[in-house]
Length: 214
View 1 (cartoon, rainbow, N blue to C red):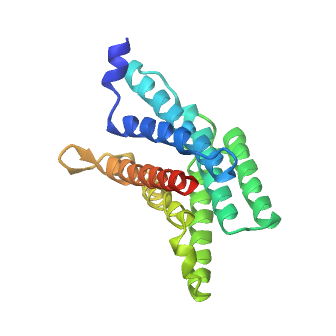
View 2: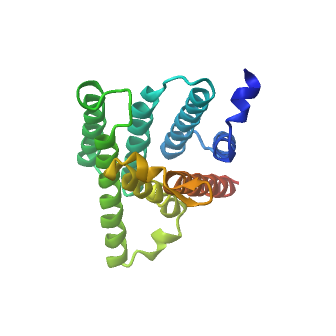
């Protein structure tokens, strides 16, 4: 049983585990952004464990997608708002999105599959706000912001949001399973590659934060 489980573990899962350990070692628990990132990493680690278990023992774990998607998108919106010092109004928008995700899970798309609407809405909110704030910084010639560690961090989910959005906008299983390079599917390129980029940026962020703390 154990060996069957281990056989399903790939590089991405090991890298997520490495990122979780890195986060717990380097985090400053007095900072909200650090705590939110740890919640994010731990959520994805649990999700990957559940998916590996499902693949190994043919168990349905579709229920893991709705909460992990809700937490992922909500956390990144909170980090975005915190970084740009957005006020209470933006916080209301984030929590309204969180409630909408719960309603989507309970009454619309359900909890047995990926909630496309919730994810796409969260991705659209993040990317549009990201672009707006960065353009504002450029127009104000606030170049010091782009040297900050948080500036790099905010790029972390962009490719992931775009890759997953492309996959689930078309909602075409055949398209996602299309082989692009060898046995590598379009899904693996559009989802796993951005995931690795995202975790790498988070790791770099934590390493830099650890250096600044010294």
